[in-house]
Image 1 (spheres, rainbow over the protein chains, first blue to last red):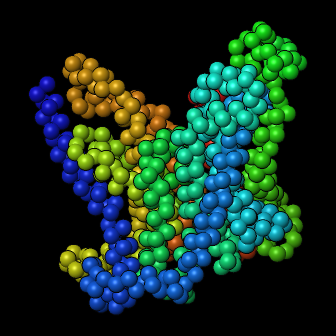
Image 2 (cartoon, chains in turn blue, cyan; image 1 turned 180 degrees about the vertical axis):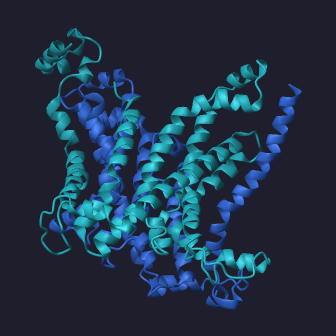
Image 3 (cartoon, each protein chain N blue to C red; image 1 turned 30 degrees about the horizontal axis):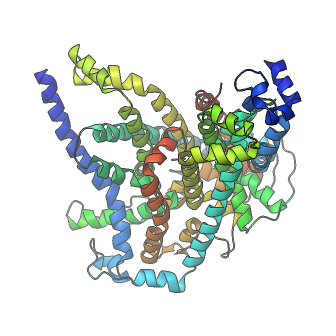
Length: 280
Length: 319
């Protein structure tokens, strides 16, 4: 017993030590991002480069808002992410209800198909999708990107909600149907109010995954009017020269939406993650 | 059961008027056959999936058998693209790199993630603050992670060289991303930085679900801390280990953003991996057919993972 307690204490100290190392490893990149965004060019490059900004300035942020299309990128990312979130929720709820509550031929095949499509990685699909998008004239449109993103967010939404809807007691819905509720009515009035945590998880993942997506956004969009923040950032590189000041400022600002959502939804996010809800 | 269900459909009108007078097995009202409604409800999802996943996937297979270029019609070439690939040194190098990259990154994420989870499971003040901070990389868009690290690794003004020289830990500038011996290590470090939180989150959730009584019982039986870990913790987490590793292997092996931003596959193809090579072949060299072939070569391996995972992910839900 005593030796176990001694080992425990030892492990505690080891844990504290490792915790400090891991915190440094995790947080230094954020420090560097924010520090760079607050420096003047003179402190960023060359011999006078500093580790800590000597004369902090918001000049990079001013530059971002006045001389770059940053605001446009943010607007586009918002439109596309919100669009994807709304459609994933609606499509996901309808499909999940069918799979959870109705019996029909092909039910388990469709359920399996959903998971498979969710697991097929975008890097396999972007080449032919580029052809599909061209044929449907969806290149350089918000709609095109939303559709492409629905390709991964709808299967996930449907699958996650299907599991959740099943856990809602059948009796409640039965009562509603007996009282004259339609199927859609009972979905909206009985099942959805009881599934709010699952809906939050789905919304969170649909939004952040669309906001963070890069490959499709890079291949299917060329115009500045539709360009999203992730691909816009890489354009701060001109002829292999990086404008690190404004770029780190833009990086910091574009990290905020997913970061804030993560902080708000933390508890529920882990639940979604343990179900396999994220690409990381 | 099947015939009963049919009867219920037949007297659908009665159900609404006087539900309690009709005798039927439980659940029949909810689970009765309403096939048409199911298909209507599923239609939007199925249409999206067909056009955005299924059709493109089969088009990829079809494209990989053609010599199609961007903006020009393709000709059927059979397996010629694949044959060419296996005689190409860059491709063979890429295959090897992809394996090293995926295996090392996943292994490191696993070990670090488990360590992080075990530490956060220890009783400590402010643990929830530490947890929030350690999981933050997960919420950052991958492209931003990659750009940020590229800047950290920068030869002349990056944090790393700047730091090493300021504190006299190194006298000369190290070319982290363009040194053939270092580049792959640096890319993997970034992948690990971004990917570890996913592991620690799922592992921590698993650890916290283990009843404390199990450890107490093991302790009374005289099990050491190490034995407790291997005979209580590990068996309980086995499912989570497997699922996380398989999911993460798929996403790690197919994510091209890190390489795209950090090294572009260089120096001299040292960090070239399949998804990035496919991207460069299809859109850089404009060889769509060949690009599709590159991205599909790896698919059989992924397919095995996808099939196993699909079974696991549906097991608790599907009856």
